[in-house]
Length: 249
Length: 217
Image (cartoon, rainbow over the protein chains, first blue to last red):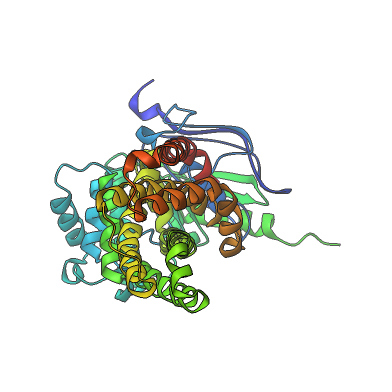
């Protein structure tokens, strides 16, 4: 298998229930190395649960999930995963720099202080590095979350509604960093409601509805004669309206 | 493991929330006991007062270390790191142990002040008994605090889960403390210390081994 064909996420008949409530049902999915998949879906579709499964934060009730070819997940698999959620996963009483230094140490960085300073600079937080997270704005906090997730240079980047609550500048920083991550060959899985931004970074999209994947489509560059992002947007829009439309009585 | 311990202690010494709440609560409980006993009875009851006060206050403090992690989802950030989850348990337990040890030093001073407990003839023996009691309490409370923190009724559930299991530790710690405060040497506390050591080993190893399963949703 070549590097380009290596399967990073492989789900077969995946299901997750909370008590008696099924949240994901029979989800089968393969995401190759370097691929960017965006999962769209309405509220309660199971998108965040799908991402939490891929992040090893929860276990499937049924089915099989393999990450980097491993079914059993341990520290070596977790080391290769970076997660950005709508929560920053950082400590409010630590400064921006202390937060990043802590996570750099936790991931075993050789020079944690230097790594933290470098990432604070990359996400435009160098000026506020000594301020506690508690006093930073939502946009700044999200940029810090992005630095926390990308600092260990993960092979798989998982993003849960990453643009939520961001101002235009912070959203552009995020989109730029994701574009860089893609160019560097990282696998990116995003779940979002934001069709335009989600589509802009995707190679492939799917719609999750009531716990099932109900639609899948590829985003071909315009140069390949498939109509590019515009055509993908139209197809996605139509599919989204169709699958999420209320059923007539 | 040291990374997490360092972060936990930095957070505690920056906010001083757990330590200050612990000391205030211990002071209040101790004052109640002081007025409830006559002076000679108070000295007799000092070992029990020490451990009962400490355990009720300590449970609140241990639970708080996990509640802190829930804010901003930082607990998930920690679980996502490649740190072994058994090591997370040990780090959390050691963090609690250090904060509780400081609180217990304050409590011992307050006991001497309020209940007229004399300074022990063998302070080293008292230190050993207290450290063994602290290790067992920290291990058990950390394990169950991690379990209960996700539940809605966590404030009520943690004491309900932990207190019955703490009974052997409390009995042994109280008896060993009574012997040491009465001027006995460490050898005379032998049977109680052996149970304390067994308790510490069982719950530290159980926590280290079970933590991975416990934190998985």
